[in-house]
Image (tube, rainbow over all chains, first blue to last red; front, side):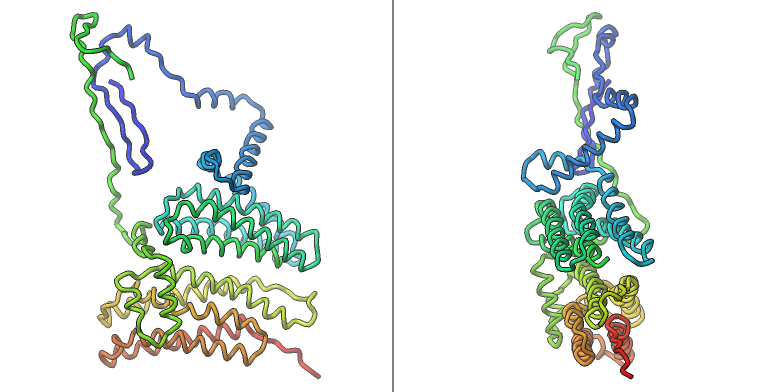
Length: 220
Length: 240
């Protein structure tokens, strides 16, 4: 007896076909090829490689996804790439931003700012994604958190640049540019997933989220 | 999937091999019976069933507060989108605008120290005003004073009553005492009138229900006093 099942993620069910014909022929069973799954081979090979190779591969994947998210083109490759969400990228950018902002301030609020930015990014992404889901958007939860986290990267760049310039209007110009870049990328991803009449309701929280972060980048 | 051959083939033992019967099976997970329906996310989906046109109409109703049209706007569909994001916007304006107002007044710009506490205090005050107080009032009104309005109707109404402060607080960045008081008084009047006008049908029932006006007015007054004396306080240099 063998059966084949598929995970049907659309309506959260499992569909499958059960073959009730019993295995009559022992010989046939022995000759049966057991398909070796691709991932089994991958797992055994990745266990043997060096740490540097593993890290480089992860960094390369982060880089690829970053390029997909920040240079929004409507190719299907982009969409497929984004479906393999990961939370390493968002974590790296969140930590980078929190560290940059907490170390650049000339005050003893450093730990407070670090904690505020960290909590703001994760709770903010969570709430914005939840909002989009409740409005009826067909958005996978972690995929959306992943994209929102990757779109924090321009604000990271903005925060780093403001460390080197002290002229206020230049800083403001840079931070506004980074804010617009972040928002444009995130909005480009999310607006396809929300029905037309509710679009602004889902996108306004995204804008508010990046506005909060950009404001922090500007004032610290 | 193995193919055992077409019909009427014989296997080694001489049995007729028929095409294997296939039964399509669909497993669907049973819907989880939660003991606390209000704790699940699915419960709140009903409060986000609105469109951007509806939100615009509701904010417009709250700004033109003297017309008791809010129930016609809301109908049987109170939403939580408005209260949540209006209060979050107000928190941002308080945090950014409060510090900006102090910065504009500061003579020596290099000595300006940004107060991050504004954010934590703003979060506490605004979310208390937008959620905790209307939930308590709603529970009192529904279960003790027997109103037809549900708890979430009151939360929705309170959330939209705060929408005028989005505009008032931006204007309060102007660092002049009289201007700030003027704008805050306008906001207070608008917000309180909105709440009282829309609860008028409930309040005119009897003396007990009319008493609900007292906590409504006092919480609103406390709110603008906290805005003025914490976020937009103006400290003038003392002239000798």
